[in-house]
Length: 153
Image (cartoon, rainbow, N blue to C red):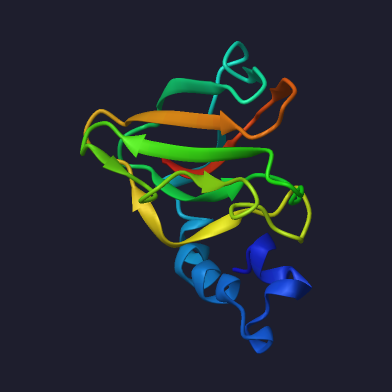
């Protein structure tokens, strides 16, 4: 079966892009009965309102056994409006060594296309994650990080 990500003309392996290789890893799981695609909102509605040059965080629970495959951060904005970090509380491990710019996790393919991880991140233990954002703007803004997950059924 072919997945919607494989149909996208900008992700063919002939373009020699990273996405085609990452899609090949997760494509067999798209129609697997063990998983269902789901998008988690990284911050609750109160935490999405971030003050000027402010900080916000939220404890997000993802179903254990699921796989995090990427992030939906939208189109890049210059300058970077916010930085992002996600920490696996069960393992005490951050997904990134330092908070990363929203621009790094964005893409030029539109809002419906994720920034894929090089390999899916397995959710273990309690499935608790600490999602943190730091605003880089001198005005208040709404921040909505979206996490693409293949959720275990």
